[in-house]
Length: 511
Image 1 (cartoon, rainbow, N blue to C red):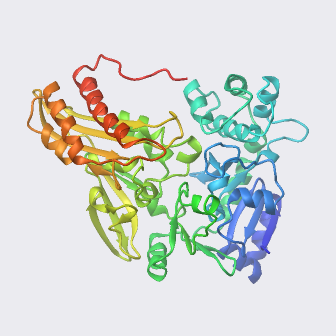
Image 2: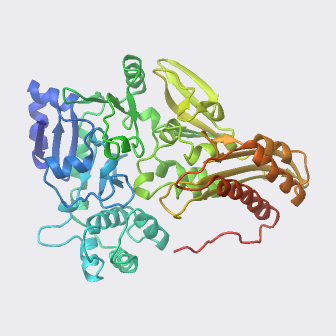
Image 3: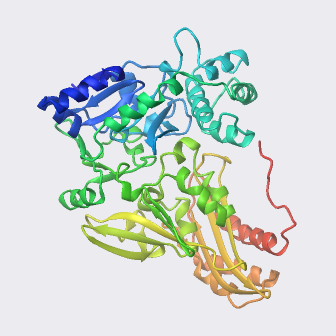
């Protein structure tokens, strides 16, 4: 049985007064357990299995069945909910997949579900627009679409078509078709104040009242999770629990629960550690905190590396990018992870912390073998350092090959970082994902390029050398021959795009 205490947000002031006046049970509950707003109700969780997803909690513990389960892997968007947090006196709304989000991630936030969008007898404007424009047929996917549109309009009252399509890319509809839904999104623009706007100050005060400087815990007796609130707390936790599983966005690791029916053991949720949520920028480089979501740092990288920004937009849906982190993508050590090849090509470095000690290594040295890294027991990724372009002669080309354009796993991920001066390749860093057991450089290909004229003969020689760099495997995504042919063709594509910038080699109007 779980211990769940729910208080309407209007009662929050009295609740906090009782804490201050010495009610020790409520004091301990407020300080040590997971607290969040479920719509407008303050909710406290204590002895509940931390492997419980938000979706399971809503449906099985709260009987809120409007949020649906489709894929249990963050692909279809039927489980979409919205989470808000108070940042500098403002509320920020983020859509996310409840099916792969764990309860510890809710501490100090507001969870909004489809049940609470209706305002009295009136549908919320995004709900009404879906009705008016016939955006629902079977209706199974509709709650997820509604929540994505709700977050879209809270962040962008008059969204562009690109913003609309980006917001809906993580929601799968099998029967209605997207035109009616996109029309509904347009009709709901500038819908004016809703009940969430009217309760803004009250919500901010309620979120600020939740203790965020004390480490929160969930303990079911068999499973335990910690939510540290500082780097020092996290460091000590990892020393005390060297086998603990770190969870930030959870967009991959939680699949062990939902797809493999495993538990994660001791969980350390790092999404509330401020030092891991930072982005520092100098004239020469970015330092990105390991737990900073993609949606927070991508615009900064895209300003210097546009193709990298375009690729990140395809790593997953907006729901995924609102949760997924750079530290998680690196630490997962998948051979088909999308960011590691780009980081390797850019000569990025990773900061690994153990206690008070930090060591920095090149990203390419982090990956040792399939799912094996150089990270030591009790170490964790603190940040990743990414150099900025060094000159206007540096060209970064990033290509993701997958069966679907959006929200799909790569068959091949290729990155070419070439510096070309006076038609001579002076520097070359070439890296691939999906071609070996780890993301890796193509060093023979690099050697064939460096100090050579940037012409077709050089490219042909470099293509041949790729066969000496990799012996790819065949799997359900691609055969080994396909992977090698694609890798060689992508080098050709990079050559054409750099040498003939006026030539269009891609599909630019895809929706």
